[in-house]
Image (cartoon, rainbow, N blue to C red; front, side, top):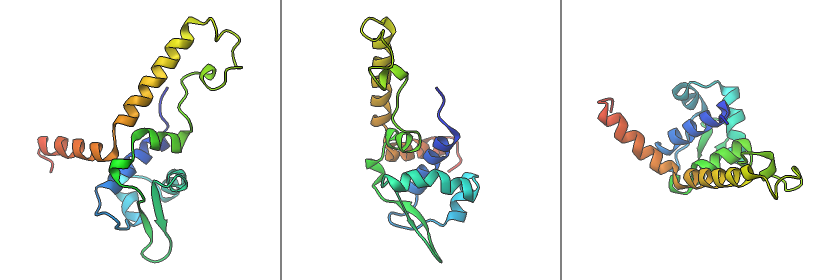
Length: 144
């Protein structure tokens, strides 16, 4: 499983927004420039995040985007699910009736365990955590 390019850019954009002053609108052109994304693609990746209440948008002159939630309240699973839907490693985990072997399949339990662990890891890492990690890395590289 590989996350989509849209999800990768969504995570990068949310981290960028989290590094801006709280409740400050960030211009679309600034996000596009700093994240190396086209305006059309940015709009596409932010729409699901607006829909679930992670990002707010403001139209018109001086319009742009800002986080609608505190970075501590946003985790990687929130963004992944907004962009790609529910996390499921296999079809048998989506619907019990997909596979008649679920009751005796030895791999079914492994898929379930792996999915549960992945969800735990993604929930454990907030955007605020990622901002802190990035800051430490940038400073250690002498880029900050």
